[in-house]
Amino acid sequence: MEKNSKIYVAGHRGLVGSAILRKLKESGYENIIVMTHKELDLTNQEQTKNFFEREKPEYVFLAAAKVGGINANNIFPADFALVNLKIQNNVIEQSYKNKVKKLLFLGSSCIYPKMSPQPIKEEYLLTGKLEKTNEAYAIAKISGLKMCQFFNKQYNTNYISVMPTNLYGPNDNFDLDTSHVLPALIRKFHEAKLKNEDFVQIWGTGKPKREFLHVDDLADACVYLMNNYDGDETVNIGTGKDLTIAELSNIIKDIVGYQGKIKFDTSKPDGTPRKLLDVSRLNSLGWKYKTDLKDGIKLTYDWYKENQN
Ligand code: GFB
Image (cartoon, rainbow, N blue to C red; front, side, top):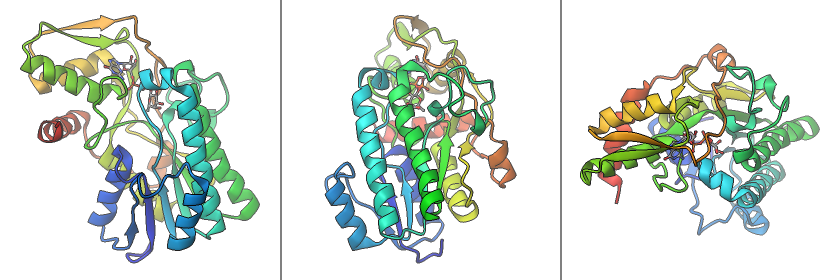
């Protein structure tokens, strides 16, 4: 990308899109297009077609998606499948029809089989059954990365796909019903501290392991790969380190300064027991993460306290 290349960030208000937008601006890119959901509904084929014909972006970061934690995925599978398929199909088709030079598609680590050998290599895709709680989102994201590969093959496009691990950071969703675990625990411990509650309820057994990458590191990786990677193979993006939900809870409890107890609500699902990504392809491409988990959680908690209302 040149500094004056026309770059479209789809989903610029979300956790990932807002981080990519910040990173692009910090890096001196000055010709960036963004559209709010009200200005452009990417699930609408006609609106998406008109936008691409009018704006003709050269580079597209496809970070717009319907996302959520284990509970939201479990309760609304039709929405997660339909909305994400519509967005992806519209943006990828119109990128092709309007000669976009390069598109970066964002997937997720949940695309891999539930019982993959760990750490998970990109080639383990479709080698086993998916985790039930997020099967809809996983199938949508697998379809998106495959769609990029099919367009590359048939039309010689340059659409790359990245598969991030669990992400966290500023502009995350802190709603306790639909969010991911890390922001949910920041809010739960913060509110329990303010209300002087005896305990905080954690979902599941606390035994599953998760890997967490700060979203600013993800954004840095996406801009780096847009500029340095033209391969057809997906690229995992993560830290290569994971911890149990119970360990994460204790780290957040300490950072928030909550003194009460932790209880586990085993009526809630654990989901995938582990999904640690193998990041050797990413590292061999010249990129490594920078933000240590504890530092990242402290930064995110500070952001939450300043922006929670
Ligand atoms: O982050 P999370 O919702 O999604 O849950 P996944 C991770 C683990 O944290 C699960 C536990 O074992 C949860 O039971 N957990 C404990 C909690 N307390 C809480 C809580 O208060 N809230 C939440 N949300 N979890 C998602 C997929 O799976 O990973 C998405 O559903 C996406 O599609 C995302 O792929 C990256 O990591 O299990």
